[in-house]
Length: 391
Image (tube, rainbow, N blue to C red):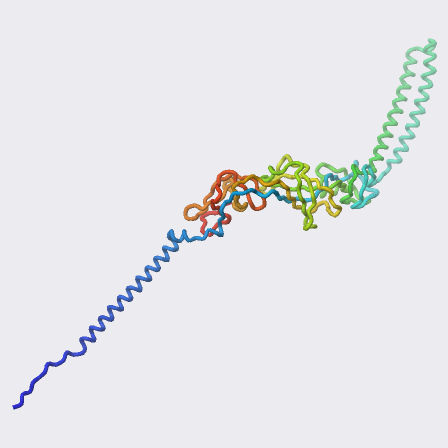
């Protein structure tokens, strides 16, 4: 008899496959969560780097700040100016009238009292002749009265002529003498008026400008018309000598003294230096475009003829080196409410104003007398993250 045995059937394959799929799904979820976490961390770190303290500490201040140093300013103060005549005047007639002759041209050298021009004489010569004729008539009348007085005087002494008649004769002679004096004075006035028609040079110099031609109507120069642009009342411009006039800033004027040596450079001859000496310092400052400066006159030592009035000049004053001070670039100096100071590096690297006492400056450096120590960083330019602008 045959026995048939049944073996247990193997478990189906679907269950292991299902478990593997579930495991893979969990791993995928973990990866996705990890990626999201990494992205969140990176995003948060970016925001922290952008807005947090680490961002401020990583700002590069070197393009915007420098350290204050200790040192001495160079022994040269540079100022701009121009060449001017030592003496200059617009020559005009004493009385208004027509210009008859002009005897000089621009560039002519003239002597003192030399005739430069002649005004139209009009009828002055005729009036002079008339006054001279009247003088001769008055003199003849006076001589007649004088002779009559002498005759009557002898009669009066002899008692023949009364005192009243004698006094009348004497009064007539005195009146005739007064007429002679008056006639002479009128002639002198006309002669002076005739002399004034000759326009003369008040001092020796050079004719630097010509303002009128013969036939022009000119008038006496007034105080308001002494500059070169006031040509309606001038005949010529007369100049004497040559000097340099520099405009020295207020911060440097304390280093300039009378007799100080200087070098002058003009744009026309940039490779040459001309010796000069300080001759005068203006007692009053001039303010232009909120800049205060003083005019300093310099005597040019043996100036060559090629230097001309009106040339632009740069003047280097030799001052010697200054005592050691705290120095900062001049561009670092700012003002707040009219007070000078510098900008320090403050909280969050923001510019912070500090008041300082300014000393002299030379070139691109300025001395600080009080309020700043060497080694302190100051702003020379505002960074893009600055919260507010300064003057």
